[in-house]
Length: 252
Ligand code: FES
Image (tube, rainbow, N blue to C red):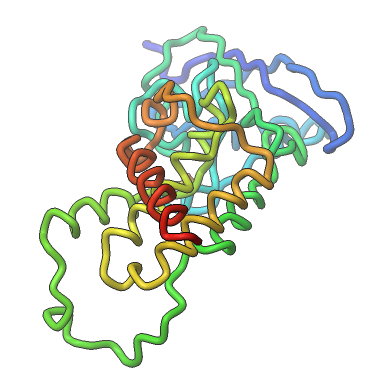
């Protein structure tokens, strides 16, 4: 009878804490091809717990590609080999029996490792706190038709708003730049009338916070766009730069 499970060899980054040194540790797990990548890690963790060993720490919440909590580097690629797929939506059927998979955390100075595959992405929260919101008092909700938005703007704003803030863009960038994340938020709000009143202050504050957090600058490698599970275009970065220049020229 054909084998229903697949034997997967794993090399997983284990690190006991932020200041501990880490290393790749070898494991073998029997996975079902219908499992997601995270379910395969769950099976490994059940085995480890049964053996009295520490389970592998990894982040997740929705497991539906929505929340942006998950994120690991799989065989050198942020979120793994499936294009436009968060690692929680990656399935084991894309692997073969006997494959070896290397799993590591995001690597960036601004995303320090907390433990194993979990990194601190608080820097993203602080960039959002710096200006990624609309604070003008809009009163109670009006009829949507009272605020006309041109269709191309609405479509593009929606595309940028699809960013889930997972940090894959930072992990893939040779400069560990957070430009795609920051730009997606700035471009999304700049395209909509509700975001216009604060656009100047927003871009200045968010770009400056990005620098404070220690992210690198963008030098147009476009690795971020290639790994983004939501396919956010680097056109957002060009828009962020235009917004920034306009804000500087306006004397902000
Ligand atoms: S766990 Fe929510 S996007 Fe992956």
